[in-house]
Image 1 (spheres, helix red, strand yellow):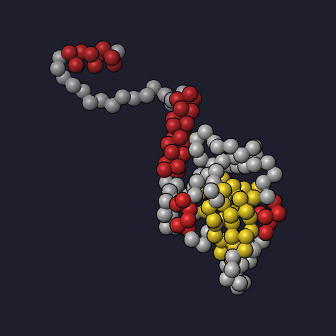
Image 2 (cartoon, rainbow, N blue to C red):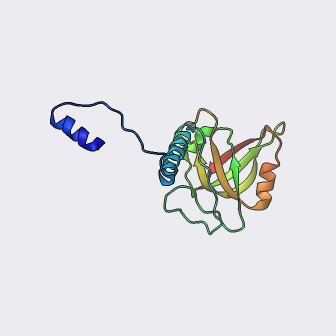
Image 3 (cartoon, rainbow, N blue to C red):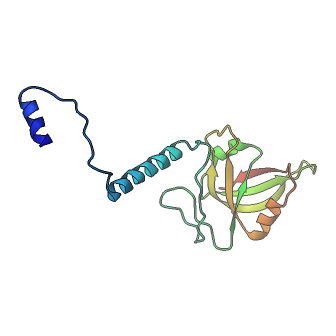
Length: 167
């Protein structure tokens, strides 16, 4: 009946501005869809609000060392552990790439000014923040044997790390 009156009013050139009314509450499927859309929009907003300085979490697979197809993080060699190293001179990160071999040197805090070779021929797994990270979110991830990793992590605070790139 309402539809016929509306058609007649539109046919006469007369427009009505009556609101459309629901005959009852929306069905369960409609409410579920609306809720799902709201949750997905909230999740998208949360992801977009993530600061760009937060690097995404990365997992290191334990497989033989090979280049990953995406060109990113390399696979961890068998028997090695991944160790993040903060270099005393972060500008050195600009010349490093995953897959390179480096000698890791350390100058212990309060020790002699001569560097000590900590890990020869360490495999570079990943370089984070090489493009001039101002906020300090830069690191070099190296694959080291467990004994060398313990020595690197156990050094006193204030120790400075450096690398020598191998050919």
